[in-house]
Image (cartoon, rainbow, N blue to C red; front, side, top):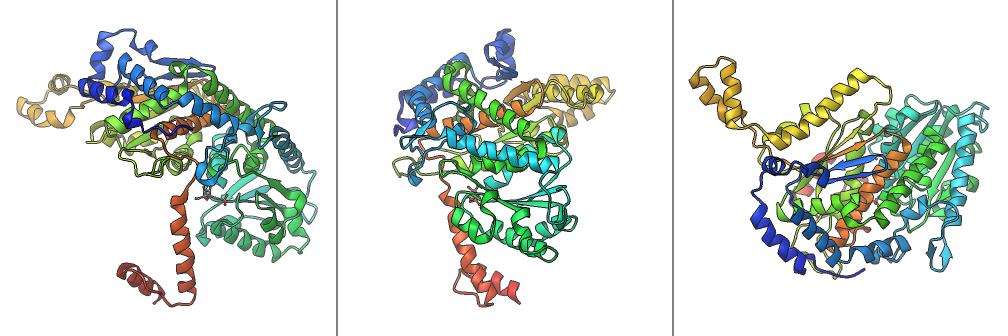
Length: 543
Ligand code: F6P
């Protein structure tokens, strides 16, 4: 990939000048001036309808942002990404989660070998395994069918699977799927409390199989299991997903229950691999496959669409517009469906672990902003929590609103109310409420002139708050696959423009190293030399 400092491009300079001219633009006026604005800034693709007209942009802004993408050679970067070039330079790896959802028969070569047949082989193993567990053909050590599955993993080996399983709860079968991630023993103990070892299957999911949290939880669970089950039963009840077969074997998991993964799949992009085994168990292999198909459709859209019609490209460039020109620090993601309640948490890892970098591809400190902060909660709950700050706070918070035309349980009454809120919020954020409107409203309520004057400043809303509205037909495994792949590609585009490496995560290493050093000190009850704060805290903890 090219090494281009975005701020040195002609497009960036033009954007800076343009920003000075348009930063005071009022969305309300833009809509009044151009009655066709909404359709000019809408992309309809498959069952996705993205309206990004409620953003502080003009046609020129969009043109310049796309000029920036071209000047940063985005298209050739996309080709490198899909072709399996080693774009994860600091680890010398390709980034090929897109190969996990490529259809059988396609060809994606890495070091001269087509990786697709191997991917298909693992998928077939996932299918067979899932079907045997779901049907009850494969049984536990006392001959009973499995009723519960526990996924033991953290980060990418947890967040993706748990988010998808929660999102597809409507499609779930009889198996109850649980997720243990935190090294906090209370997490694992709470989950074990209600489980029967005879009917529970455990999946130890760790790409490296060296992660402290996962190995501690897996060991605790194996010890708990062995209290009632014989040693041979471990092979029946434990499966693993990992690229470290040696460590898996040492842990004692039968080789036929090991699902491989590859170093060209990053942890936070791994739910499409065997890391998604718990998804396949929860909703059945066909639904898992539909999820992958949806992601593949988005891959194709991203790879081949003109940038102007390209959903991930437009979303990424808008995010850059706010991050680098308006200096907005965070973005909110608000799904209007309870099913997607873990989406913001999942995106926090995907986005912040990828683009939370301050060194460019030359190894030099960047002098511009990179990764955005991501947060959110489902609507309408979030309206009653943090929306006040989005509406009337001092910070600019661009937000993605994600809604569905159809509700899964077909409860029209509830769905109409939900969606009325969905549309009302983005309209309120755009329009705000002027002094004149507030005044009229208060006068109509019969308030005295004095009372009206006093209340006016508090009840006025500036509006002009940017939002994207993504309206999808229905929450299905396929549309969910498209949605997640959409954000993955948005991450990629932003990393390309910011000239950073999006696929490593060295920043999480230091804490891990210090934690293992401090653990030894805690276990020996002898704090080593530390800053006085850490030392005092350790002494207090050990007292
Ligand atoms: O938090 C760092 C990280 O390496 C993530 O990138 C990864 O998803 C997670 O730890 C878990 O890693 P593993 O699957 O190797 O246990």
